[in-house]
Length: 238
Image (cartoon, rainbow, N blue to C red; front, side, top):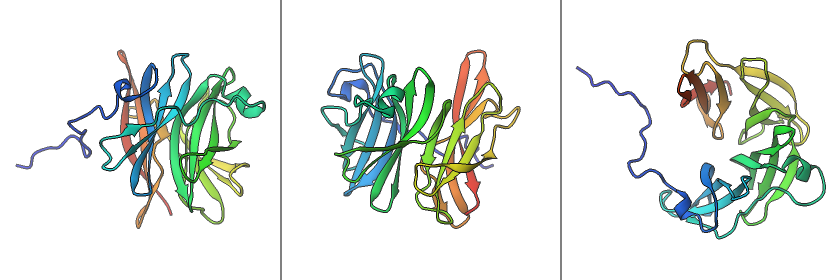
């Protein structure tokens, strides 16, 4: 009789990979890292909650993807220069996702303010200098990620708008310049009485395969003891 396997992916026995003890500056928590390969190294862009309660991004580097050296200071913090980024990042920056397009690494992240969370994009070519590109959604929106190539001449992103009206589903949008986005539509949504019935959201950068775009996403199931988050896999047309 075949042995039943509950999980396709198994957690590494050495977890947690990084704790606050590995962060060389004072902080409350460390979580939600984006990952990329750069110059033969593994790069982690970690969301760190500092002692003020706002989130910043720290950078980790590794030769093997397991043991990371975290840089001494955050590489991105809420914007302090006058302008729209400062106003909409007053409460922190969160949940980065890295996508390489050409030779540029784009970071879609959540900007948080009194108006709620919205999506923003920054970019870097060397993980030393980071440049903000634009605010690319209205509140309340999170979980944004870019596709790694243009489709029919347009940049493409997935995100999860959030409102008092459910279901909280995954949307796709298109842009000619990564600033102006439109042609938005729902591409998949939670399933009632399913493990993701409360809400779903995009995860890492979609992976192109011969069968379609592979999208690893998260789903949430409500329980009396709180929300349970799980990972799922979706496949979208090329």
